[in-house]
Image (cartoon, rainbow, N blue to C red; front, side, top):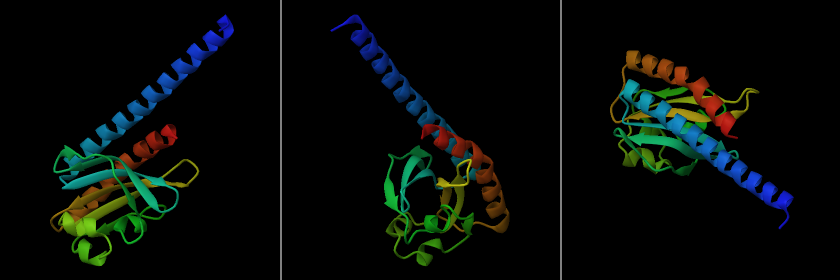
Amino acid sequence: MSKAKAGLAEAELKLAQSEKEYTQNVVDELRKVQAQLAEALEADRTLIGELLGTNTIRTLSHCAGGAPVEGLTYSLPGTPCANVVGQRTCVYPEGVAPLFPEDAALAQMGAEAYVGVPLFDGEGAALGLIAAVYTRPIAAQEEQLATAVIRTFADRTAAEIERRR
């Protein structure tokens, strides 16, 4: 192998390693954001989800009962998240699971309340969402606080997701 080819191969390897480290740093940053969010909201579950295509969410960070949960991918139709992604903030202060009978996960987790805020890139395209799920109803004051707190994290989170792309 010529010296130039060896140098090029080494540079490509360093670039690949750098990209991998960068992606891991972004994911770590999102996990920090999500952990802060879970603590601030006292929610039973929180998640940061990235839109894949038009109907699928992949969680970049997911916490249940204060513990991290491995990433999951789910289809949007029939979920409260479908009313959030690319659209608007949605709050269901009580009785969320019966409103979405197709979303078996809500019933399994004993979901009672839900707050979701959409994430958009700099050009206004849908990126995903941040959501909090509660196993108890939430009062109007808590609903307003949760919405405000999630919105505070939304811009930072959207920027991290956009950088990752």
